[in-house]
Image 1 (cartoon, rainbow, N blue to C red):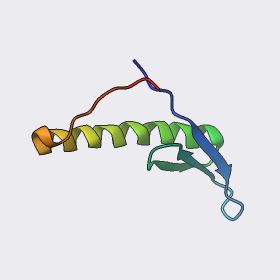
Image 2 (tube, rainbow, N blue to C red; image 1 turned 30 degrees about the vertical axis):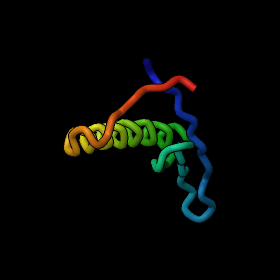
Image 3 (spheres, one colour; image 1 turned 90 degrees about the vertical axis):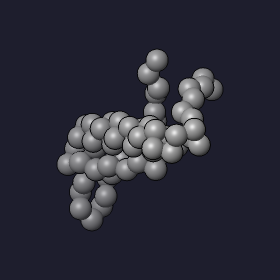
Image 4 (cartoon, rainbow, N blue to C red; image 1 turned 60 degrees about the vertical axis):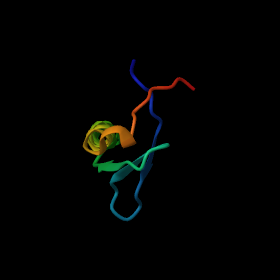
Length: 70
């Protein structure tokens, strides 16, 4: 089951780049366009979640990844 994440996208006035923040995760990305920022945020979500799973495996039984529907 895929999880739906909300991504807040805003344009930086100084650089003109788009900044993407994933709501509920410590994940941030940027891009030259909104679409690129969102695409980069999606990739960053995947990397973040894989890192959490790797951490759980390294620590053994200390961490458990569970799926919930809220």
